[in-house]
Length: 220
Length: 220
DNA sequence: AAAAAAAGTTAGGTATACCTAAAAAGAAAA
DNA sequence: TTTTCTTTTTAGGTATACCTAACTTTTTTT
Image: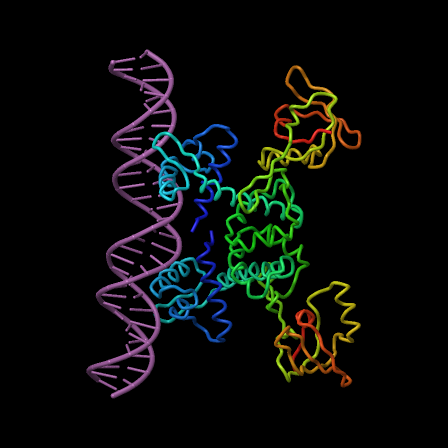
């Protein structure tokens, strides 16, 4: 019954809502996020509202209902389990996973997801450090901090990222920053906020404020 | 570009053609196989013909072109690799596999299939003993059957295995089963599928269904 | 060979999900 | 407060892929 398009909308609305910490998601934002025209989005929002998946008031944006939120979380669960599978089992690189997981997340079989979850050992986090919701839509809490919030001489271990864009993930690979990488913050530039780090085998490294803003860590 | 519906048609035409050993596939057959109405099938056949994926003559049935055959084999390759994955890794049962593989086969990523193939160890046969086409559409020729597909009192000769794991090969050695071993199937358990065999020098032997599933034979 | 049956096709309709262009609503500026 | 600009919606169109009903072609039977 839930179509691929509907899944995309619900997932996007969920992400936009949680990223903005603000209530309604607007038509243009959504159109932007989905790569569609606002007119198309309006039409779909009306259909989703008719299914009680979201609250829609013309010109006022939308909010997911509990039902819609559960649907979104089911899709996100599938997406993140597949990402875990792609990285852990098929040896995909960070930047390769997202596009493929976006296809796999729409495969509609509860049995498949259940068995996949068991096969993977019931992981709690995906390869980017994002929590994997359980089958009831519960999202495990993570105590992660942004790397940019640390002050010298804090030590930490990289646990994830807040941005999945392939270009960004590729950038991290070139810098040799991965999940599990240990680091120490040496210095922060007063001028542009860039951070001097010391990573794993005593290697110095400078990263921009912008990069540090997208990296999640556990401080040690 | 190839849609899920087109994939279904091409796959179905391929199977109907090879199972019947007869040239054209007719509209009604296809409609039956796909669970659609003949009128719908006619429409799609015309669109597939326009794409040069098959030869269509009104009232005379269809045949795949080489291009259409390659497309069909690409889908079948994906289907069988996923079947292998579901059974070998996710511990799906025989009867659970097909429906889920039918969903997964439409996930359109060459990278994914390539990595999956490698992860599975480049299997030549799916769990049912059907050959898995390679990425060029070549179907490994097997005059082979799975030992497990034989029924008493079939006689056969072992021609290979589909599983290279040392523990399995060791197991075969202890059972005195090798390439070239002649055998006769005496009985098959209704309960667990185990087979009573008579091998080479008049020696009786019982093997599990699991074992018989990994043994290729030429029947005599 | 004509009539009957079966098989297949065309015509026209539906739902999904997108599009462009024009109109309307709401927010911001004069 | 009226105009302007931005945002959003409505109206109408497209392509896919299905449907039913009516018609045509082929095959089979009488």
